[in-house]
Amino acid sequence: MHFLAPPALWNTAKTTHTISLAASASNTSGLAPVSIGAMLMAQVYAGGPTSGGHYNPAVSLGVLVRARAGSIDFGMAKAVAYILTQSLAAAAASAAARALLGSGVGHPEVGEGVEVHAAWLAEFLGTLLLVSVVLQVATAPATKGNSFFGLAIGFTVLSMAVSLGPISGGAFNPAVGLLTTLARGDPFEAATTSLSVYLTACPAAGLLAGLLFPLLTNGGEHASPHEAERTALNVIDDKQEGDEELGR
Image (cartoon, rainbow, N blue to C red; front, side, top):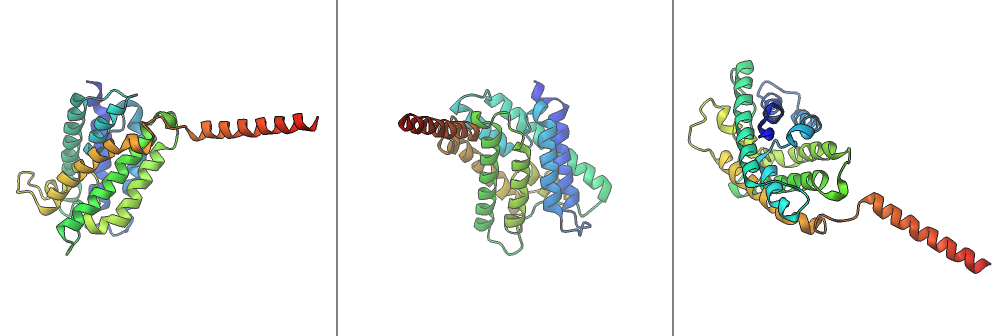
C-alpha cells in the first residue's frame, strides 16, 4: 500500500521528534509551540503529495468519517494502516530523542493540578478544531488546489498549543500522546492519566469533526471565495448594463 511508503513514516517521525526535542527539559527557549507548529506545517507541505499528510490518528479517523460525504476515497483499511504507521513513527521518534538527550525527553502531560475532566475537554476541543481545519482546507472540493492548507494547519496547532497546552499538555494527536509513556523508556507501563486523556479525547474529537464536516461546508460543496467573487461581479455587471439600458 503506497500510503505506508517511507514518506508517511518519515514525516510523522520528524514531527514527533521535534516535539520530543522542543518540549524537552533542557530546552528553555519557550518557543516549543512555534517550533512544533512550523515543523508540522513544513511536513504537511513536504509529505502531502506522497503520503496525504496524515501524521495524526485523529485526522485519519476524521477523514474516514468525512469520506461518507463523497469526493474522496478513504476506507477502513487505509485508516488502520495510517494509524499503525503514525504510532510506529512516534516510537521511533521517541527512541531517537532518548539517544540524543538521554533523559528529559519532551512529551505532553496534563497540567499540574488540572482536573482530568478539564484536561479531557481542552484536548477534545483543540483536536476538534485541528481536525475540522484539516478537513476544510485539505478535503473540501471548494478549497481544492489551494496553497494555504499547510499554513492553516500549522498555525492551528501553534494557537492551540499556546492556549490549551498549559491545561491538557497540548497533544491533539494520539500518536503524540504515546510519547507520554515512551519518553519514560517503558512503553508497557500502566497508562497514565495523561495517556488516557490523549487516547480517548483525541479520537473522539476526530470522529466528531468528520461528522460535522457536511454541516460546516454545506455537504462539502459550498462555493469557493473565487466563485462567490465571480458571482458578485456578474451581478454588478448585470446591474450596470441595466442602468445603461435605462439611460438610453
